[in-house]
Amino acid sequence: MKRTFIYCLLIGMICSGLSAQTLRLGAAAGLLNANANSDFSVVGVTIEDLDDVRNIGFYVGIVGDIGVSDHISLQAELNYGNAGDLAFFYLPIQAKYEVLPRLYVLAGPQISLSSEVKGIKEVLRDIDDVAGNDANLDSVLRTTGIDFSLGAGFEITRSITAQLRYSFELTNRYNGPLKDSLKVRTATISVGAIYFL
Image 1 (cartoon, rainbow, N blue to C red):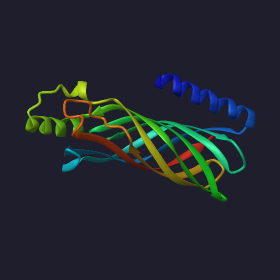
Image 2: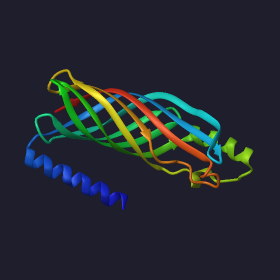
Image 3: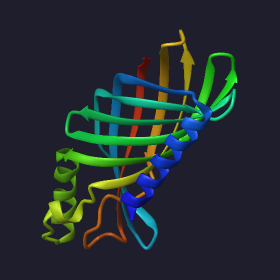
């Protein structure tokens, strides 16, 4: 179902881009600050709030920008980000609005696919040991998450754009025996540039 939704959304974006005839493609790269937080609660009361993993790394990817009107466009990206013990593929699909000439804001959903979450596993192993569970962490950590992303950018030239974005996870990555008490979510801040062809 998730794949069907993604395919339909991408096809819709491509079709609207063809009718608007303002499809721009490019490459993105920059710095990535990724962190993962775990909240352990009992009966809705937070017992422990851990800022488990915080790493700085990089991201690279491809960008498609489809103009909808003079001031509004849809920007889709496929990025790979690596920050120490956290590595993800990101697919943000965002509405982009030009608030001033060359200055824009953007917001929208993002799908994140984990490829490496070693730091999260280490912290969860400690929590599971304390709670008395012997869960296989590969089976209780979800690899796919739904995020919300927002940011701003500035077009330095027609081809080069600087961009700042913050993304936070809406879903819980943990799906183990403590799922009602333990929430694991990631968040990222990225600062980078886009080069449009």
